[in-house]
Length: 444
Image (cartoon, rainbow, N blue to C red; front, side):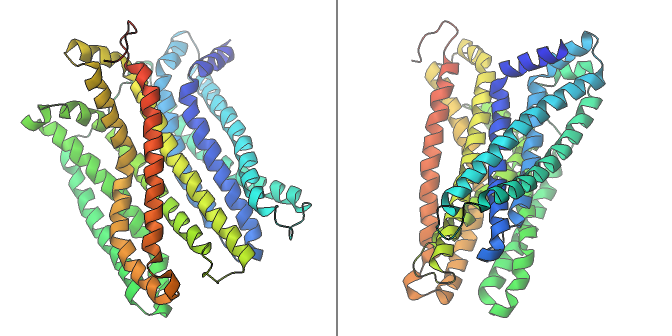
């Protein structure tokens, strides 16, 4: 009976699980593509074994956030089960089994989609025999399953710890719980950490640009550490500033719609800071993949032969597109869910004198902020690094590829604009039905 209730409620909450399904399937598809490239990479001279590790680390953070979100959505349901006499251990096992079952289906779908994408450009070449298909799929699927098992083990352990600590009363209010801190001045230390790490990162970039070639390997090997720390510290600092500004209760915050927007940003600011940092890293990685792939497809780029160059360039651009889809899809789904959850609040805002157009304008502002916030730190990094690295590449590459980095960065920016407006339009169209009053009148 409990299992049937769990499955029935999972179907009713399909929109919540859709976020989990999309994240797991797409990221596991990327891991599958990366594993295929890593297996064949030795013959192609292209080493990408670090890519699945990076994706796995990102996926652990994202899946942990999604698990917490699903727990909030179904907290009252779990509290009802406990009140009816279900043991907490059985409830925990049922929920974990439900998540693992969905995750396993996503793993199968992700490996199939990923291998299909990889096979589209790999097995169409005549120099590769189709008999290698089964061996490659089996080996890459095994590696992908190992990554999936590691991700699910870590996330399930963290989710079990949280479920074991929650009591019935906490479950009843878990969905509406906001995050806060006792000392609102903690954000200042994150600002100091951000400044120090960002200066170290810029120092590594300047070393790559101005040092002789034999010494470049040293800053390249360590620059990822200050980069990652500066990204996480930046968003901890920014969201901490927002929260502290809200707690100060300044007169300006009560003007226009600033209080509503600020409350929406800072209600779960700790989680939001981590999620935005992870998405910023995904955004930077997609930009690097796009630039690398487009550079390899240039006819003047003669480091590899034509077949290998086309294969590696196509792989990099495909990975870039997948990461952009992850970025915009998950943020869009998150915003649509928030709009659906806040549909009752819209009735209160109408009673306070807000028109439907004003409420729709607030939703559009929130959507724009959700899609833009992870890009802020990425644009800051690109603003400092691209001009410096462009000068270094001009000195190394042929004259025909002069200022190629600036051109490719512009192309990537154009792709971002297209993705941004497409997903903004989708979110606006889907959210429109949640902005109708309860009597069904159209928006004015």
